Length: 140
Image (cartoon, rainbow, N blue to C red; front, top):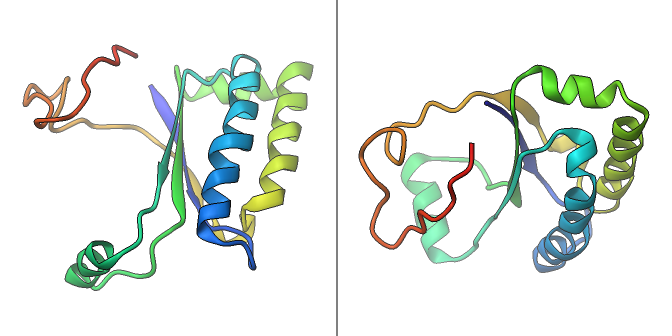
């Protein structure tokens, strides 16, 4: 199992709440619509939360300004997104997503990369999920 991790920055002039609303309410359904053609098995949006707690956390590590969110897209293997991009349906789906991303994402400042998870705590790691964490998802 591999995934694409996309660290998102919003376009200049767009407020964070509008960026996150658009991402959740407009872009997410588009991803759902094209998931099959692109070989996407799972799609998760992590929306950045602002406030004094976030400021303290970042300051405790001397970290840079946070991204506006992170998208994770899971695929069965490294070949799956490449295979999907080689079909007419996959190319059309990818073009539709990219066209929409240009509406709200600063693509030039939003890195993305392929990743392989190595779970340390959780289901596979045997440590169990922390209290209050929903463990109902039984995906790949």
